[in-house]
Length: 228
Image 1: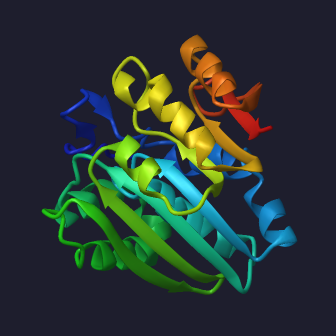
Image 2: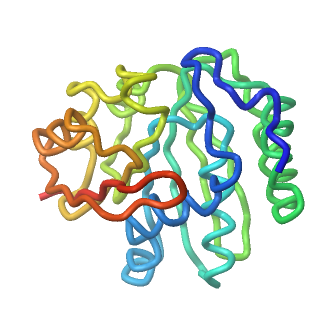
């Protein structure tokens, strides 16, 4: 698979994702790790938080995941943040590596993303109508702590992303993890690919019980957590 030249986030000197396993990794670590399907079986609505929108890869994978699992009549609220939003042209270029299998979703995501004024900080809301139901994307342009603090209700699940602690330590600072804990429902969950000691301790201090589970791709372990 060809690696897009724009895949590296120049602000953190790190790839946005592993181009070979990115879709599978999202489904395994973030969606199965957060028991998305089980939560939607109990309640046909779910509120998701994400720290790091990046290229929209996670959102693309989620829409594919819900479709392939024949979810119906779901209402998905997807809250996410991006401090350094990329252009729609760059998004399309990066996601093009998945075009053989996800062309329709790439085109839909890019077309909808193109309607957002990326020069304006704060919330931007767009909607997707899918076979599984409806998805509302609430994208905060700005810093992650600002976004989490601005949420008017807690989330059912969190995707903790946004590059690793070594490349982007501010995304994993205690102040932010504690805010995530405050904006997570009791019994809500979060998942992440990193098992760094500081992250484990930070999530525990934020009110989560953590579990280290097998990873996927090049990651031997990943982390699931539940708000207690």
